[in-house]
Image 1 (cartoon, rainbow, N blue to C red):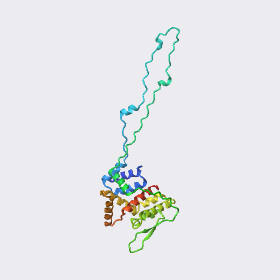
Image 2 (cartoon, rainbow, N blue to C red):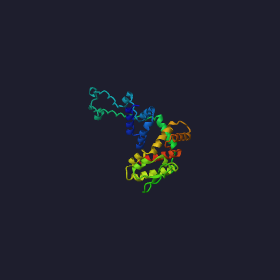
Image 3 (cartoon, rainbow, N blue to C red):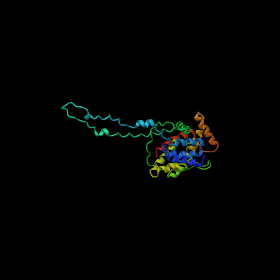
Image 4 (tube, rainbow, N blue to C red):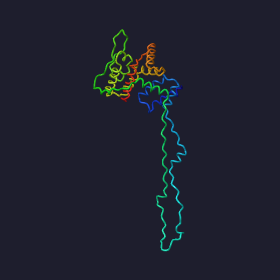
Length: 271
């Protein structure tokens, strides 16, 4: 695909009202991994459908016309019996007024039919994000920033990351979820976003988080799962995880990936 077409797709993503700020950033990152066919499908989704023209017969039917007046009869020419005074009825003033034509209504744009690529993304989100039946967590009280172990070689002790600034969120990796409860660890990240968001711009915090290796691993693994057509999704997770380990890339387990999908939905609510 030519560079001019890629810029046109990026501009369409940036001004699309169908996507949230997080989804715009996510699609912009996915573009480098997508094929030409997927890019064309994405461009068709974001392009607004042209409204259908109203048939001429329907437009002609929509105009209101006034009925013709009956021919005026000169009753002076008629003979009246003697003793009856002559009277000529007057036509009311409003009878000669022509009713204006009713305005034509603009037909509503046809709904956009989602492409096969978008349906795959929606199906993946349904499998990855189980329905949350628990009540929403209460707003966390004012607290200090959480600390996360920073992955280090096995020969040395692990350091910690204090999420005190928006830039600290860009340092999180998939290793911070390994060996722990991913829901609890991601809840700590979410609480830190809420606390820091009262002092900083929440969009800046989320923007830095989307630059983190952890977020990029989630996007990369999502693409791998989209390309895996195995109907057994548990087996698809295992296949993708094994392939990423063999190529020495960061990965997420099925439990970690699903927990991250729930976490991403909560982050979108902060915008």
